Length: 234
Image (cartoon, rainbow, N blue to C red; front, side):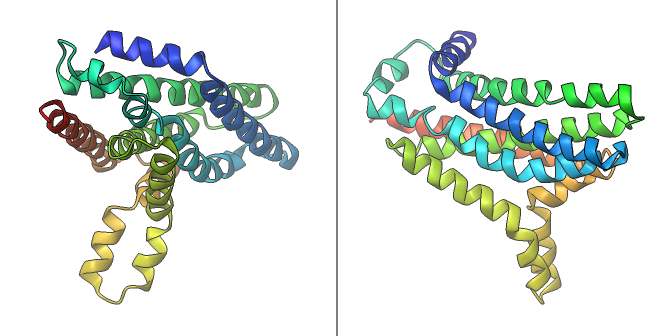
């Protein structure tokens, strides 16, 4: 697992993917934080993370699109699947590599928040809540992207599939409000990433939101492992 994760990280940083994704995320964070600086009120930090939720959800599929589809397309997946490691170790290693790139970008995004300490009085506890929430939903979205990548040998198709799911998870709240059936509305709201993330941006550390994102991550990594296992024996 560790060897797979290290290999994955090397591949990310030996190509433009990691640098472009991190650069785009930091540029967007910088732009939104600049608006906070201009407003002169550090209490507007919620504006930054509310906007970045959408952008992070859209950038993660770019990070994950090649994780398994590229291995399959280049026929290197057979060497990987015949290696003396379990399929779940392969999947988790791939996940660690992709999530690490995202986590690096999110950690670097805290730099403007630290700068705010010198020009205002930001609520660092609240900012840490935003950061933590972003890591949790990012973890779940990374697992989803890797699963979609395992279903195809075309990275572009994997990216489009993951983007479609990301968009659905972001707009599903509007569907819930349009549904007349209260039970169905509750179910739709329950699976909404944005409603779960809003709990963090409201300064509420809800353990159910943490369990939700961790469960999604674990379930999708398990399904990806099963997918690879089926290919190992065929």
